[in-house]
Image 1: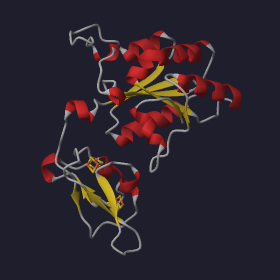
Image 2: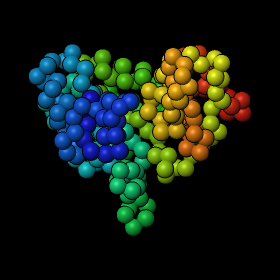
Image 3: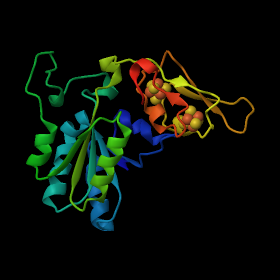
Image 4: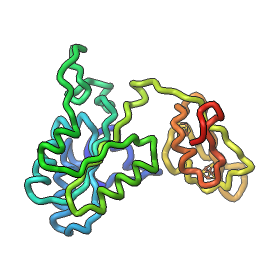
Length: 227
Ligand code: SF4
Ligand code: SF4
């Protein structure tokens, strides 16, 4: 996983530990292209880049992938803002710095315009659809772009009820803990493994933890329907 600087760079730390390069804004796309050229089309390296960084200096790398017969996968993490530095607008938000409506950059059209046909847009809260789009992109010999689109929760203030937790059903497998949600902590009660505890003040009710639980010990409250 190649990347650069942005809120997603925090994914380099455990428990996610899913970012392996960080040089400068936009560099991850050039790096993934170089790796793929050296290692061949079966290389599974993927670049991730935020929406504002992509506008800042990621577009040039993508142009080069298309032009230079690349086959890499690039994931644009489109949270609709410049989150790392406090939520400034950028051309993809459709707002100017002074808060007036401006022309909104169409990421999908831009990606196609540089010559990349394989482009998918997913909601990263839908894990199954996101995994399927990533698998399809990575396995494709053609260059591919996956746009993971969901507004930053610090901006949208989107909030649902926390999941219901069934301690009896929990096998303490640790999968929900491993997704790195700051609302989940691992509680050691002297058992063979820790069990998850959800801080209801921090939880936004996204249900990602419920989607990874293999035994249904975490569930959306009845009024929200099944996860
Ligand atoms: S529902 Fe979302 S925010 Fe709440 S604990 Fe689960 S993963 Fe974290
Ligand atoms: S994923 Fe489910 S079974 Fe595993 S620790 Fe979390 S709640 Fe328990």
